[in-house]
Image (cartoon, rainbow, N blue to C red):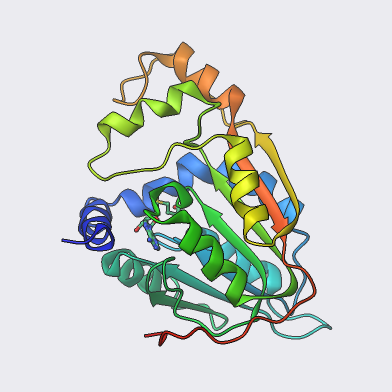
Length: 244
Ligand SMILES: C[S@@+](CC[C@H](N)C(=O)[O-])C[C@H]1O[C@@H](n2cnc3c(N)ncnc32)[C@H](O)[C@@H]1O
């Protein structure tokens, strides 16, 4: 089984257990802060990479929908066909969002298309992050902007424990390594910052990821890593492989 196939199986199980929809509650605070930084405008084309059950794609779709500048659209891509199915089922009222099954390792879309790319809590699952960075660069429009938001990275020690717990392999890189990765792929204005999770923390914690609520609070205070970058004003050429 390839790593993409392993990922698909694992996240199909997550989707079947209803965890795709649950993630909205866990990621809402950090995503809300990121959306403000994205300066979304009606008419823009946005990719939600690793969209899961599609809740963030729907927020994006509302933000870029009808306006004087045109009718924006959002494409959600995910390796789990079950997540894609649920994302579609939850978005029947939307005309400007579409969900496509595919991998970040071979983004099923054309070159130079997206004005903005958001990827929430997904990038550390990509077995070949170099390949994913290359693919995101390819599908982004000249001057397009990239927003990678992740909770698992070296500077948040609480999240590193997940590496052992998760059933699939993940990448645990540092802020600086992410910055260097994107620079190596010709992205410009690469910056990293922390986004604290501002949601209230209950006094009792009964989940499996943290020892107690004090630890959860400490994890949320360090916050997620947001890496932002811009594609220079260049057009990418079509790849030698076929996009399926
Ligand atoms: C923790 S979930 C986050 C989902 C969603 N962004 C959210 O915040 O609710 C990670 C998602 O990344 C997807 N994923 C993992 N590897 C992927 C890959 N190589 N290409 C595309 N999606 C991938 C998984 O299927 C899963 O839906």
